[in-house]
Length: 248
Image (cartoon, rainbow, N blue to C red; front, side, top):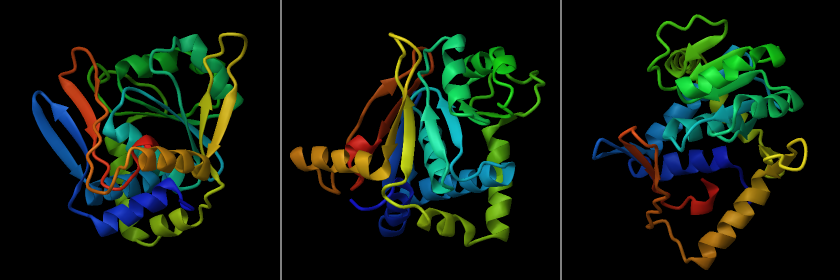
């Protein structure tokens, strides 16, 4: 597995473009996203983030429930050489201050109003946090905060950038090495300040492959980790078709 997550995405979107990469159950109906669609979504997000100013080696906070566009954002961040920092979705606002400042985070993805409110509450303590994107717009219509924008706006800007620079995304993805940092995970900090734990693409994919080999998973398997948010009417699951299950 001497590769990276975005490189695996490119391979899957080329080799099995029409096959489902993820499915999200919304009000009883499974909605499938193909590998090709996921690749396009990640490309547009990556281009949008680059155009907005996120650069290689920087960190971006991702906070929310187990949703397809959350994972797509993490892949987009990795695609341009930046580092996603997922935070606990049920963490109180003050608990987010140390990770954001410690990693010098300027960009954040927040799933919904709950997570947006959390980040806005601590913004004065995190003055460098300048770009905040949200996925679910419910309750956010009348918010007027500097740097706050829907993810759809970022996607639209990224789509336009990709059309003008068709080779940008693949060139960025191909710069990555297996030993580059793939993500930073902060501990809960129960005995002091949280500690940032760094994982490379290789360290995560190596253990994922070991798990897939142990369970004899093949490209024909559908692995369905279920996560339901109370009251949302949505259930998320992912089909892997060759991407080891533990890598999600």
